[in-house]
Length: 406
Ligand code: PMP
Image (cartoon, rainbow, N blue to C red):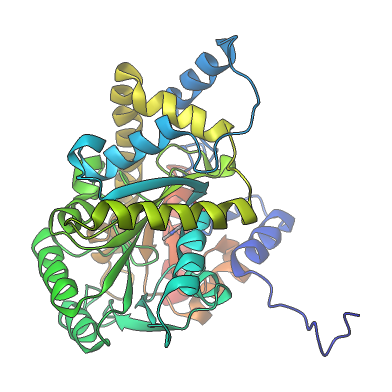
């Protein structure tokens, strides 16, 4: 049935391909700067101490069982997750919001995309993604049957946000377009709009009647402050902009493999809001049922314990600070070492960019040489996961960069 003309090989996944190559690499000095997952200063995966406590509490609770969750997931988790983003209680949301537990951030983007593809009026509006964006955005939206286009975002010349270009493209997009925005710690560039730029983006979105599709995978990773990192989402909510928000707890709770996330739908304010939310929720429910029936239990229970417990949620802020401060320290050390070596070019962007990634500006052949000669792995775009640096390998990585650039 599946002859090659019908089922050709799919292109290999870049991240997982490099991961396999890294695992097979026998060099003792090898450094993995590909994977977007936090590592401690020994280069090891880190179970957040507050998450470890929540796991203990969960296992100590004799009343826990392994039953199915409701279709929309664990509501104590969804409510706390929405509160974390929007900064207000359900009662203050004027019936404008409904939250669904999903298969982490990817599943949230997927569920939102499938919904849009099914219910947008024909001809379906385009989905606008930042240039560049997370590698998986294009496949997720196109797989759902939507067409994508890019809006200007990053200037390779200034290594800063191309704000004028972005606003121009949002203004030029046909009315009612779907605009995907990363809420904080932009992947892959580490470059976010300022608060006043977010305000201007919101104004443009409103005047153009666009639909905002926020992707929030790094709350707490940009500034270390949860509220500051969700400023854009809260501002759009206060401005009454209709939106989806895909929310991931992979990074900020370190629950990568537990696939813990939410999709929130927020309606325009007004007398119709409540019935729109109910209709949208009923269709999301129906899509969720056909795709995964109900979402997974464990990660949502653990996240709910952390988010709803006063002590644990306070201690969690300390864990976030541990992660964001170690990453900031590695940025400073890498930049400092490159400057000490006199490596050609300007390396200030390593510390002005924020979040988990540095968009180094290294070109594809430099990145390839880093891998083949120095066993230092990063994405061909020059994106480096700064979390992969530690006090033992940062000088080695700087020496390697110095060599391939020099
Ligand atoms: N959006 C962005 C921008 C991301 O970087 C990621 C993780 N790499 C995700 C969504 C989804 O992550 P997950 O499915 O692990 O929650």
